[in-house]
Length: 258
Ligand SMILES: Nc1ncnc2c1ncn2[C@@H]1O[C@H](COP(=O)(O)OP(=O)(O)OP(=O)(O)O)[C@@H](O)[C@H]1O
Image 1 (cartoon, rainbow, N blue to C red):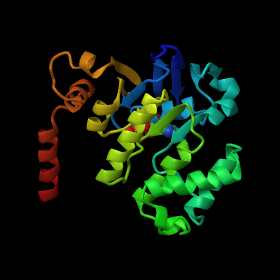
Image 2: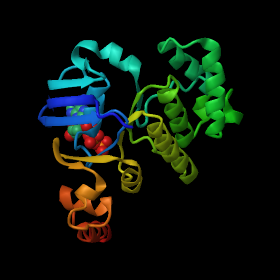
Image 3: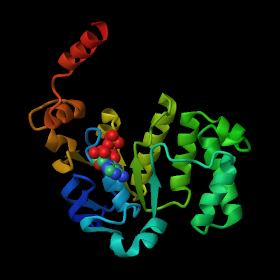
Image 4: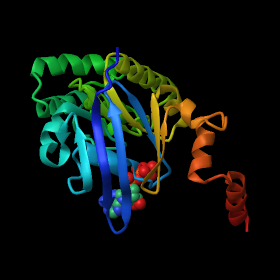
């Protein structure tokens, strides 16, 4: 049976750069849930994830992960979670195995265990023939696969994924979707931000929509689908106010042609 103990909580979480970019976000994520965290470009998704993973230390309000106040225990939080960013800088003069050794050291993992796991995980992602190649030669998708492995190699109980499917081909997307679903079955908590609505719709237990720094919806797909809008894509465009796509496309082409 799934327990309903909260593992991520925020209370009036806010962040201001020149202007407020997160405004009083109150969220609770229970152990074993997959949360789809979606919103338009610039809505504040990455900022939320960077606060919850201890990367952005200065914020207003409260946030805790696994019962730890992130403001006070960022290092402890970082040790216990996995974070898969979009397009992170890899040390690409290294080979993927060397890079994963470096990550393993940060998590104080045992060297032979990292070596075995790294090679086996690379193999699953069809990078078995590239374990000793420098990553400077890697495509965007190949790099993203290494980042996915790096974020999970220490088998964390909570995973934060920020647009993790960036650059992956259709087979790899299906594989990652399946991995996330099976991780959830094994009791992991997953906080997942993406623009790929079909994947979010399929894998999420609960969907949170954020717009201009504010949480505008929080519920299961069925709960959000109140007016039978049919798909998460329709719900998203309805709630975030970008309904005139064909008009905008027409304007774009007009400008090009005139
Ligand atoms: N370091 C920073 N300095 C100033 N403004 C920032 C900084 N980081 C983010 N912002 C601003 O905060 C807002 C939210 O950015 P954030 O990256 O969280 O959005 P997002 O929802 O992840 O967007 P996207 O879907 O485009 O990745 C944006 O207006 C962005 O310009």
